[in-house]
Image (tube, rainbow, N blue to C red; front, top):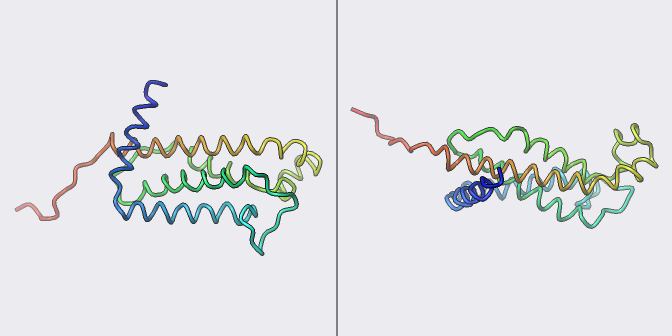
Length: 164
């Protein structure tokens, strides 16, 4: 398993180097959209619609940036590409974990019902940085798998002219 990690990273880098401007544009849009979808409702990005009852921890900003970058790579792999392998749900789980990690522990209704206010602050809040790390790790695995699949399962380009 560990011996395949460098190969997967090399092929992921090769796939990124072959991306078209359309792909990079999709990645930029995906990063912005991900940052807004995770950052606004959790109030990591200050806005008038949502507020936090606890201060935003310092690690929320780098975690949001890493989530946006990795999610944008996964999103962009779906733009004009041959069939690539499934990500075994690691991207979806990573996205949900990043949302749970970034949210205010007291604002999460499920956490409040399950643990109460003191549990949200004493149990859930200390777990959130680990959720953020797990989220980033799962998104990185999904991105590398998708990029590795683009090189390993490359489909030849067909000519547009019909055969006579």
